[in-house]
Length: 115
Length: 114
Image (cartoon, rainbow over all chains, first blue to last red; front, side, top):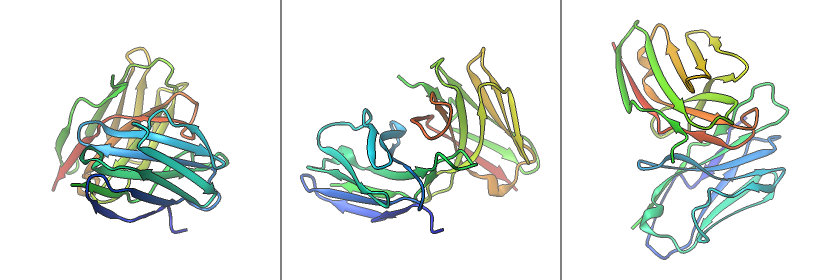
C-alpha cells in the first residue's frame, strides 16, 4: 500500500488566494483526520470524518476553513481566503476501526506558506 | 489550555544509554495514550500505545509507563540508537482508541549521539 497520499507537498500562495489541500487515505480505512502543525500550537486536530461524514469540526479555526470528503478515497481541505497566519504544515491521517493495530497513519504533510 | 504537555522541548543522550521522554495530561477523561515519532519532512508514525487499564506496555526497546494518579506517562527507549533521533509526540484520546480525536503534546526532540 502506498500509504496516505497528500498533495501538493509544498504550496506557496499570496494572501487572499484560495488554497486547496488534497488527501487520499489508505484504502479500506473508514476514518480520516486533518491536522495542522505550527511552532506555536503544535499538532492540532482540525476535523475528522467517519465513513465520509464529518464527526467533529470543532478544531476548524474559522469559517475560512472548510473540508469535504466526497467519497472514501478523497478529501480536501480548503482555505478561502488564505492569510499569512495559516502558514503551517497540514497533515492528513487515516485509520480503520477494524484494524488490529489501533493507530492513525499520517501522510507526509503539505507545507503551506502564505505571503 | 494545553491538555497534553511535554515540558522538555529537547533531550540529548548518548548511544546505548536510556532515553526517557515525559508527558503530562490534565483531562481525566483521557483513557488511551500513544507515542508517535516524527522525522523531518515526514508525517508522524505510530510507536506504541497504552490503555488506561494498564500501567506498562513494552515493545522491544520501547516501554511506556502510565501513572494515572499523577496523570503522567513516560516513554523509555533502551538502548538508544542514533536512528532514534526524531521528534516524539505524546497523544491522548478520550474515546478508548485512536479512531477518535487525538490531542497531541508539542513534542520533544530527541538527539542520540554516537
